[in-house]
Length: 122
Image (cartoon, rainbow, N blue to C red; front, side, top):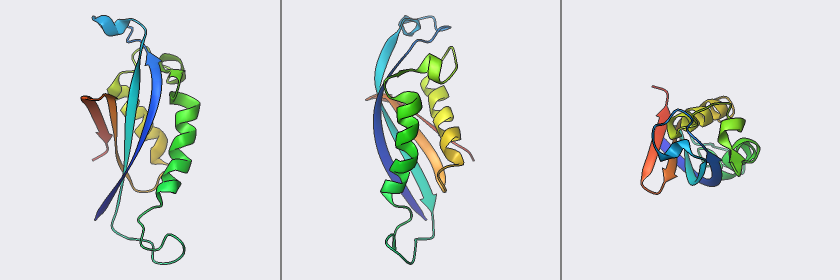
């Protein structure tokens, strides 16, 4: 079994409207997104021979999503929620990518350098 990871970064702002601490105020983060694809069969022919999936193929799915909904956006608006927590964002990203990226196993989202959440379906 192979697990392939591809990392992305984006900047975004949000406010947690129901939170009882400082995150209730507008603020931003430098997020790191890690997309994990899993599979056991490598491609046997063509230019991607020996690959589970081409890293570039992951880019072509993830980068338009980042540009349209996440990078330099106000997440409360683009994700249509009052509380775009790290957990909410990770689940939203997974659900967005699930039908577009074959073999998607998990997404991990770092909100800060030391705080991350992963979402996957068992």
